[in-house]
Every structure is written in C-alpha cells, then in structure tokens.
Image 1 (cartoon, rainbow, N blue to C red):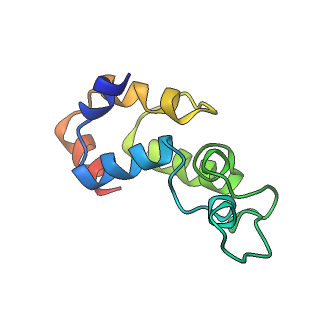
Image 2: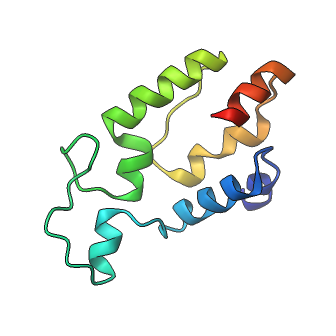
Length: 108
C-alpha cells in the first residue's frame, strides 16, 4: 500500500498532507488537546456532532462527505467510502481519468 500511495498523481504537498493524515499527525482538535493545547471544545468544527479526529474529519463527518460527494459527482467518479485512511487512498493509485477529469481533480 505504501508504494502505491506515492504513485498517486497529485502534487507533492497533497501527498505529504495525506501521509500526515494517515499517521494521525494532522492538527485536529483531539490531537491538539493531546499535545497540551488548552482547548475546551473538541467537537468537530463542521458538524459539531463528534470529536474532531482525523478519521471523523476526513472520512465520517456528514459535512465532509457531502462536499466530497459533490466533488466526485462534478468530476464524474463514484468512489467507495471507507472508515480507514490507508484503505481510503488505495483506489486513487488505480484511478485513471481522462485529461479533463485529471485537471478538475488536481484543481480540487
């Protein structure tokens, strides 16, 4: 999986961010509290329904899913959603889009 991840055709900063997300190194509210930040509220800034963890923010949040579904529809793909980031990124290395769709997805 790790080698497939680096073959995904996106800008390096996106790969770096995705890698940080898979390693739970993104500054979510839960991670900031764990690092000693004096946060009082750790619920998701988007939906407010669950704690803001990497998994929730990027995979299970209803608002995030709504935005991703709109983006996928606009680009013209129907992905399968997962609750684990390492599984979530696997199909992207196999995804083949025409140039127009590649440009749209790169822009997103």
